[in-house]
Amino acid sequence: MIVCSCLGITDKDINAAVDWMRASDAHTLITPGKVYRALGKSADCGSCLPLFLSTMRQNANLEIPMQLRGLGRVKTQDLQDEGRRESHRLP
Image (cartoon, rainbow, N blue to C red):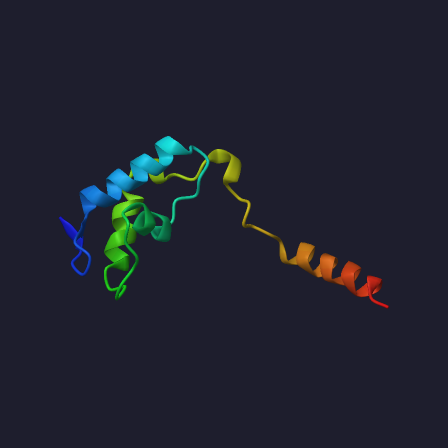
């Protein structure tokens, strides 16, 4: 199925890119931008992005490696505490 008509990217292309990236690096975060680059292309109009993402999410190899899960979750309190420490260091 054609996912991106602007660039002629199919669901098979996306799945092949995701599979290749996971096989080459088990710990990498796979993003749409990386998939485009792996296919030697760059996003054009972006209207395909919802279908592009849906296709990526259906691939079992897209799963985030266990070691990387939760790294983006930073508690607001931690940020506030860090801000207080930084403000005390200012001259």
